[in-house]
Length: 394
Image 1 (cartoon, rainbow, N blue to C red):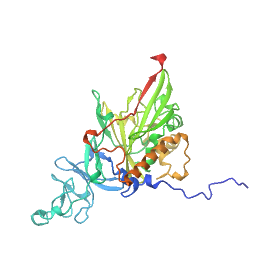
Image 2 (cartoon, helix red, strand yellow; image 1 turned 120 degrees about the vertical axis):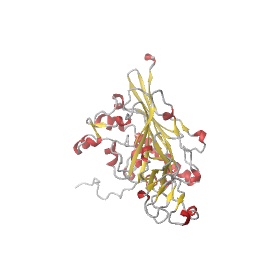
Image 3 (tube, rainbow, N blue to C red; image 1 turned 180 degrees about the horizontal axis):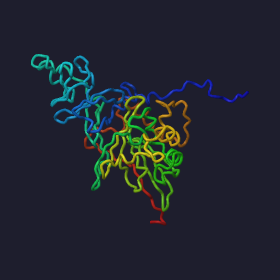
Image 4 (cartoon, helix red, strand yellow; image 1 turned 135 degrees about the vertical axis):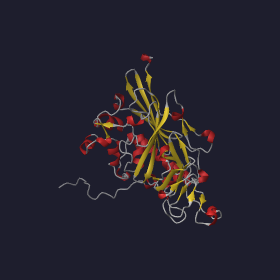
């Protein structure tokens, strides 16, 4: 007999609903809707309606005959048939049921069954829609209150191109360590950006060294709040000096991570936008500076010399990556069962930043990092890496 506690009778576990739920009307859902989010590649908007899901909402993405992208609610404002079965024409998308046509801004432009094709009645109805813009090879949507619509931010690391460089976009969820659609809550992945200590363990030794050699060294880390979110400064002693690497978590959910495989140091060359599809699935859209087509696809992680989808189940168990570590926490991790320590400071800080923004919008204020001035759309980032030489090597 023993009096030592066991798993029997443990309390029902819970999670931070206010930080993880993303549907309309939830605290985090309303916060995320105050920012622009990528909802597809530019090439995803075509004359064939595409059904997508963003922040728990199903939407129809298309491009009209004049080249304008549109993002509409799927249920036709007339009698509810889905615009997924609609036909894209010059002026917009036409419902298959009674032919009502809607422009990319939701305006009803034609009702063929009505007198004069709806000249009088068209103006009385509008299909629910969201504003979209194209940038960096991606289509961004704003899904919040129109009177609070900020300018679409631009990022200096994607603006300052050197000769021969161009921007390439990717929708395969680079950085997730797994498939295009990841079956767990977005936050338990995004917090990983502020967890540099897992790098030398998970990526540097447990599953073999997946990055360059110096990334397997245990870093000395400081975490700092920024006007954009949270950043970590990681120092590693290398031959001739100190390797200084800065990683940023930029609201709403932008990954500014210097490539852990780059032999040449410099500013962060790519950004990843973590997009919650719903409460229990997410994906990552990426845009980066490259010099050859297909370069982004080449930086995906390899485990035991294979890509994630090439591994057997036994190899997934023997060579886990971010996907296995995060998805195995459950669809939404149980925060009540965590035991955070000093090395989890960045995660605690990131959660604190989100909570402060929840309080801000509840008080009628704007969240951090949004701008309403087109002249102030450029965001300057610190993310990147450099070797700071010792005096003996200067």
